[in-house]
Image (cartoon, rainbow, N blue to C red; front, side, top):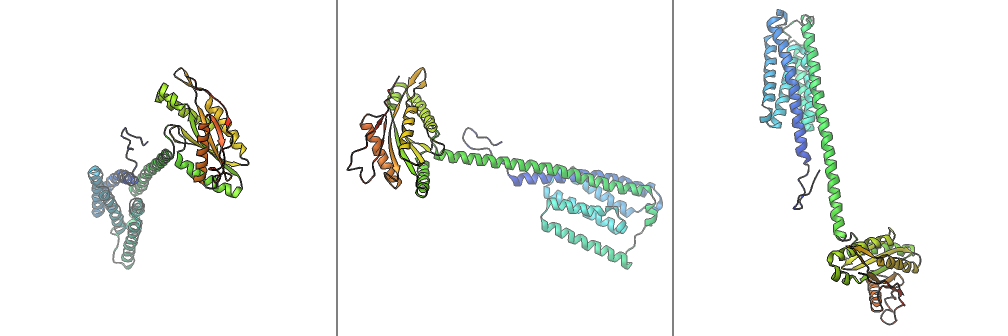
Length: 406
């Protein structure tokens, strides 16, 4: 899992290209390991056939081909940690196709090494690009066509009696070993390859999930207050615009509340900033509890908050919520053996009754909040329409007196 260091930087993530290269290299090593065992078994059978078996089965050229292929595979496998992935993969394919071609030329269509062609195609499809596989297929088709033409035209004949060869048990043992060990080598390597690919996909998915979570966290930190977790003014403005656009179509109302805490400075001065932080965090929690999930409570700085109520059928619902907020905020806050209490002055502006754009809505709500401050605090007051705010007196405030306790 990706973790954060003390200096804030994440650990390096998963590089899929590097991991895929490692998986392919492991696949090559697994195939080499299986083919080495196959080659050693075939070499033993070929040795018996050429030096201990009947003279009709002896063919030094075929034994030499098997010996060279076995030596090449053993060298690649033993030196695998010192060779590049590309060199090992190319060497493996060369041994497979040259061995298959030698068997085809030596024994014709009866060659037990013909399945090496198929094995080479499969390995190349896993390790190389598609055009490389098509080139190998085309080259193999050309080789088989040439061998067929030489055999059918009499230009080349098999130098041993294939019927006599077919009567020898060791030949069938050789065929079974070739099929079983080659299939086993591919199956084992492919099983490891698929498990490694599954692990890679899981790691990539996990990394993508972590990156998404980190991006969401960064986005949250950019739009939310670190202390209280409430949205900041920028997000509140965005949500206000969305709510106003919806209200214009639905005919509903929106309440925009400016809220300033009363008695917060006294708490800070008497009990310190930690107590002030506790008050702000508690007020934030109580604000969120006092409004609906579709509404927005935001901190805009210091001890000032904004509450946006959407989809209101009547303005008086905003007053009901304001009274609920005042009661919630005014409840004592336990801190270090003290019962801290603060109040709030709330100015309320209704869209579209008091203003039809956000800036004007904020101005009249702010003006109503300061009117509450001037008239005794710990109350809420509705604003007046922005066109009349400078000429008409403010509406009567609603009072919910709450005393500061220490």
